[in-house]
Image (cartoon, rainbow, N blue to C red):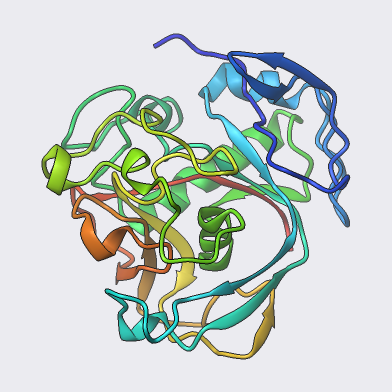
Length: 281
């Protein structure tokens, strides 16, 4: 697999990020940029290229903002755990992988490839929440030790709120209008994973959120609190972690609000994850 420079794909922002822009590959990107985030040191100018050289992972900057998490009671296909709808305020910008972590990227960090559906550019599958968090910690420790990543930044799984906020990308309905062009699922493509980034991205440049593989989130699984919350990360304790995404099944599972969950040590060929880069708390 040929490595490419880490591209920071820029959604519509409101002057929060300080960007040095260049164009290439048909879309706007950021090369050698310093990205300013409130309450965190900016990423050093060389970080994007250095990170890309070792991982090939494309990160998308996600602006702080607010949205309504969950689904209304009359949404077709809705499940009970998608409510009560909760107003979420995210006060800090963060980065999210443009795709799920691939097998090539996972093996480059961990040294092994556990996936059942083999292919360098396929999402890594058959990873537990514990495996995904271990990957994030190893990558964080490596980048901190090398002096490339400031100590107040870390790689992690996205919170459930960050995941749905990025998935919706400003939309409020059950699905984006162009959903059929954005998903892999069994009704059209067989119940197997597919190479990442082949379908159309959402409005913020993120691929495969509505279908390909279920993605682990940071949070313990539990009911939504309702009302308004700021920077939520789920219940304080639990036994099962949140999964998001349309997975391989299609139908109502492709909706932005669809939730699933499993024990943190569980793994199967439909489970993977997407990398987040976040300011440390």
